[in-house]
Image (cartoon, rainbow, N blue to C red; front, side, top):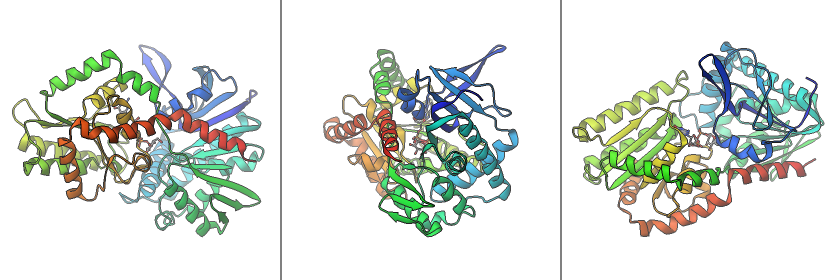
Length: 463
Ligand code: GDG
């Protein structure tokens, strides 16, 4: 690799995916929060490269250009997908970091694969980086990369951002490889977490495991300093508002509402089908409200979009079965011919369709048991350009730290959730307006682009 770059992003996935048209394949951008957030610094930047997996098992493809910057695929074999991605990343780290909602599995072979793939990323990044380059590594799949990279390239300015929560110390220390992961992360100059609680949890684990001195958000270790701070992620507000005000999308929204039978109240959930998202909790609350006559069956509809996700990982088949059983139960008991009460869509939707759904949702249900941030909550708020609508939001999301005027709920307290959902369904637009207006200010201020700018500016001032 001869060419070197001055700004290197490393993430589990590349910002593009391969699509086939007949016999020819091409790369198309995969729309995601991270891609939008980094667009201003990546797009058309000849000094920037993105290192990640293409989503296709096997050796990495040749580097290529997209949107004016370089993409450098990292190869991941079928076996590594099972052990590194589905195994250690999503059946060990993901559940452990989400309060062990399902029991994390600890397998030494998975750990070996995690180390191997992280080493591959570190080697690739080291080879691609100019002297003194800035490197930004993302998320729980790559927590060893900062440390591995620091060993071979002490000259680099290394930032790391964790998109999921950092768990309480009492949970984190269960991890057999807790020391290795902490040391991996401490290779970074700057570690970003979604919330101040994440920062607190991380610093407590560091102190316990390494004995390093922590002063506020500064950790001193091995003649090096790591700064740890909260950088709550935002959304691409202009894009979302652009869609929410697009006449085609608005026409589609009206059409969806008619298809649903023009109900008085539409309640909506939009999630990856994941056990952390609390989909079962909201379905249970909804069922009980119908059964108790507190929500009128003929005027209320719940739409639940559940994007398929990680179907081969432990816990995901179970959550799907549970949700589908609940949907069947509610519709079997409360629906009438041609008019289900719950519309459950287990598939991925184009963003335009999601925005149309946000536009018709009188009540948005975001009820995770634990969530790093939750961008769906912010997207809903951004779409409500007339300040109508009620956001019911779990206290256990990062978003709850910012959207203080949402209807905050404890998803473990079904009675409390029911009371809030009932009140939300009956709230008038006028009553809902001040809360929505305040949330819209927050979402418009802390955008995805602003988040990236804040992180990189902070990183630029260190060392
Ligand atoms: C992780 C953290 C943190 C959903 N269904 C479809 C679809 N989506 C889009 C939403 C939203 C995104 O996916 C989901 O983002 P979330 O933040 O809600 O959740 P995670 O996927 O768990 O993300 C999370 C995030 O990273 C960023 O740091 O907030 O806490 O867990 O943008 O709109 N998009 C399309 N079709 C769908 O069917 N196109």
